[in-house]
Image (tube, rainbow, N blue to C red):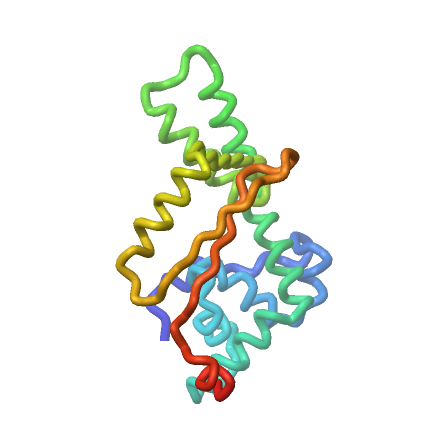
Length: 188
């Protein structure tokens, strides 16, 4: 069923396993370890772990059920952190090297790669986006735009200009008639 190199799937000895992995049975542990080799493909990992895969529908349902089991989810987190622990150190080391005055010419690509690694192991930085939309048109400009947009409509639009309160910014109210007779509207 698989074309991936399954010899890369290795369940560590029990003395190297964390609490969450130890709480699983041997097939569940094999499933968790196979996930990384199969790129997160839960059905391939399920089959590799030795579970029944005779019918596609049953395979899909059973693998999904196993993948959403709380104990398995916790073991996946634990095993991912165990496997990526050294990767975090490499990413931090790369960032430190790039911060030095003797950085190499590929610093932008290497820095992005290091940030991507940190992001994927749960050490992402905080990103803030402030978006300000400022419409500097006057009420008259906006009303003219509305008139231009509605001038070719078969439904008449009536714009009612009202004086604005001093504490509020420009407020535009508009009314329109959808052209449906009252008798017909009552039926709708």
